[in-house]
Length: 124
Image (cartoon, rainbow, N blue to C red):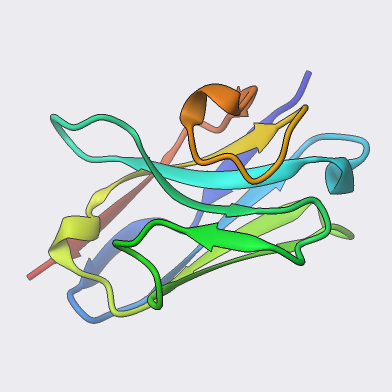
């Protein structure tokens, strides 16, 4: 049973930074591409960033490009999302997700396992 546990969310002022973590309970974390998604109140879940199995490739939503950085430590079964220059419109529940079969997908239906989410609130 795969479990993904996010942490690091919270309340921050606009312009501030947060670092999210996602720990995966899998035997071979390095075999799976990983992604971050977010869902704001009243909106659909949207893609934020994705990272390849070894971490050499990344891709970002236009809305976060240049402000967010996705990374992973395969020795610690952990993925990160460093979020800088946060804006009120970044307020959402952030989810990490594991893609068991493919890689570098930005559509949520490709992902097989999801965390419970962590709330990020950016005040203006």
